[in-house]
Length: 465
Image (tube, rainbow, N blue to C red; front, side):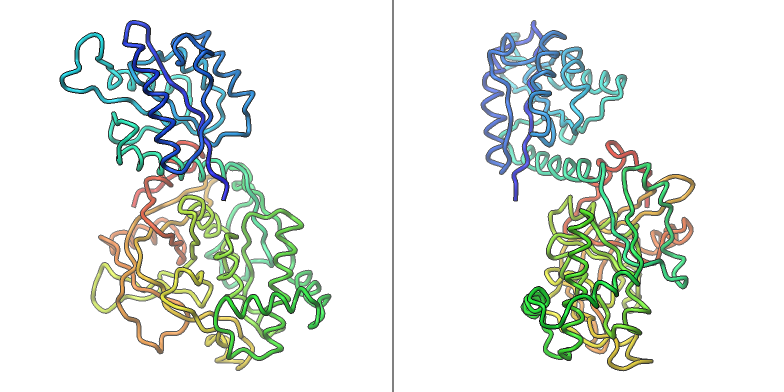
């Protein structure tokens, strides 16, 4: 995976100690490297002290950024001392990437005029003027922090995730394989609203998908290779060979669409035609796509795909679309989150087993092969979803934990028990505000990362839970 790259900026104000800048250049570049990222840093001789303290030096820095356009994912604005806000505006108002403002702390015992930084105050000045100019930036707690500390390491990792979300979601495309089933008005969305936010929808009729499947023979080398690959992915031992071949063909066809249209995500009409005509359920194929790093949601839930994509960018791990499905006994803060078998294998306790989808098999035994059944593992998680309404894209987000609580083996599909503080209040609000029966889960607590990227860089609306 390509390392993220940050452009480094250092601020200065003439009557504060410029001797601190050289040390800051060394410490910040070291901190970025040790955290696993790369950096770009202008030569020290480009400005008087290797930092920006005037509009002219700011313009020189802006020109340096233009020379490196496309090479950096974000900017780290470091304040070894108070820093000059006018130079910062000239340097960064056209940066086009997220900006993290870091300010050095003063040290007790070094508060004399030769050593006192006043970056605590200078950070407010930078933020104030950036706000006036409409320059988007990120400021994280603590207010002042030394680069070579664990607190700044966490800030840097959070900022890297914010950059991945903000940059990755500025413009992306979703492939829609099939029309929304009329039974599911719960997953309706507004394409025009989505396009306003840079989200393009590419739609394909299921008849075209089925036609492409028919063009592949059972003995096609791509189909045979995909079948073997899928058998290694999870347990297909129960699946009849003809259904295995059909699943492999559909998997290849989905990949063909992704490559041909350069899709970032896909969402699929997974019933009724899949089982009635092909005799399969595509759940396990969505599971595999998500594990491969390609976001895929079921039931044409495009809004869930958007959230899956955001959390996959933030966490760099697979995500899952699940139902708010069952209470867990009488514990008001526990819920069984479930879907038929589309959860990424890596989010499960152990290897799943591909079965004949029990809901489809009830009326047509043998026509729903493809549900990857198992249990979701225990891990800290974030949950989120969105809706389009009145021309706005609105999100909610919260955090919880998947637990080790058991679910009886007769419970079909892939489910897990989650605990979420004050769950009942949150459920009431989700229902009242018109959010769907699906939510999206991702690995780790990243609500503040999503909130920062959504609210400040992407301009989405946020509903507080």
